[in-house]
Length: 217
Length: 219
Image (cartoon, rainbow over all chains, first blue to last red; front, side):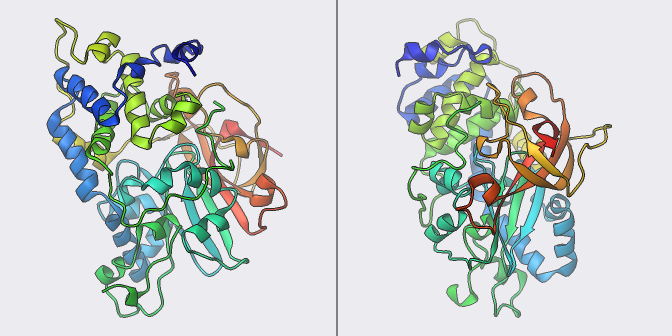
């Protein structure tokens, strides 16, 4: 497609829509060019850039969600509160916020397995899991998991019984889903911290299971 | 809009790109792209859905050829220019236009911490009564709006069951085009795999989607 073709698209809301063609094509240069301009214009504070990157590189990630799951496994009252109002229960642990404003917890058991996707973009519960992994944002996952969830799970090494109900949650609104995986057998004596170590990111999206205790060191 | 972003149910994209021990970001520029996009969003000049619409307004060829954070940074330039925060010559020259004043202070690190802690809830109180109740059978409309919508093609004209009422939420089809929040009742609707994909689907597969009230009709 030529630039002219693109420019001929009629869209009142995007009359500037080829602005981006003026940026360098290499992504690192492209980001650098825009960053420099935005900082020079006073639109972006470099210290805020560092703060935002630090937040998602070091503070907000799947260890947050793992603590929520571990508490749900070990504390009956918390489990009940989480299933009734996940936003409030997660907030009580300090993990509410951006891209976790409206949380719903969905629980796996012997008859139901839950999987989360966003077929239209990449909606993901950032406040408990951090930024999404590449596979979650991939065309392959977004296109396939709604039509062939069992085939997708097999690629993740997960073979579910044919009679296990699968519920795929396509995040079309601002409701964000946290999957509560099944608690592995043989974990009765573990404390919350030990339990949290068994909870993988994928198990909280539904493409994996929590680890068995012997699999951890 | 019926474009490539709406890919639920498509074939041909191959295996899932699973990466063991994947880093949070694969390069520093990815983290920067994420940060710049969110920090510019904090000016409040465009909504989350206007941002999504900027991504889906990339041509299908471009959408598929760009990586995730490339899309973010690419459409950020469009959003910033359309919002009047940056002008075209500035993008072209990579520097502020001569004589422009600096903007009022941008969001600072403390503001970032507050933004991430508070988020931007989309729930809105509504005085109207919800049209549907839990357990109602509903059919989705078959409209194909040229603008932003959150009713994927694969779920149009399909019958499902209301399982949850979430109260009022900002309506993406409106806010994405700067036409106001116009909140509507929001529901979760459960569809069987067979309703969506025909008889090759397992009768144990279900897909749940959030539906604004105007997306659905009584059966």
